[in-house]
Length: 289
Picture 1 (cartoon, rainbow, N blue to C red):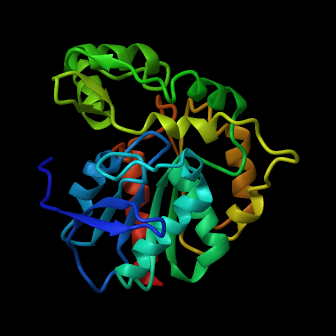
Picture 2 (picture 1 turned 90 degrees about the vertical axis):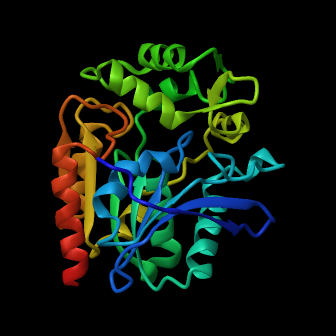
């Protein structure tokens, strides 16, 4: 699928960082889609989503602070959800967006829930990609084994092989070309020709801190999305969004659309047929309202 044209744009955070997003033009009369990636990921994760939707609907894919083409923070302790939410609300205000549809992958979905708590009127709909108010302990432990490790690779094949070795359990059906494509989404090339993961390794510092006691209850944040067009996408072998949590989410918000993507872990790419059909239903519901 051909990559549609987009504009590289910048917005400024309250603490003076220059933050980057890809802006794909679309119908100005429809609520735009705001794509928010996961902990170590960037706007490139949503290339395929934009390819399907751009032209018909504006798509904004952000690099959170410290990722992709956004500036790195001087203080690692600003790599936390409340600050990310402030950054995103600043972008929404700058662009004078009345309402947005958030596609949130992993961390991005947590931010969508928090926006539901703090600024629900701006939400026209939400897609939660493999994330819920309870995080699977096994999945978080697995992520801690690699986040913040500044590994370098000599070339793209070496990067793809290393990523495949680390994540084959989440993508058991991936072939060599899939790992190559994934490596180009998650890595960048340095001036000396080596490759590294495309984020500030300091994002690991607050992530690896001991959890608060008592733990923060995210169920009210999730429940703040009730009544909106809402879609939950889960990878069938995900260790971050466990099946029991997904079932409980459906019980709490019965109007939510819920699809499971087979043979995928954390996280689906949203290019899978099950996800694409569900996205079409979500946006149809948004436009109907």
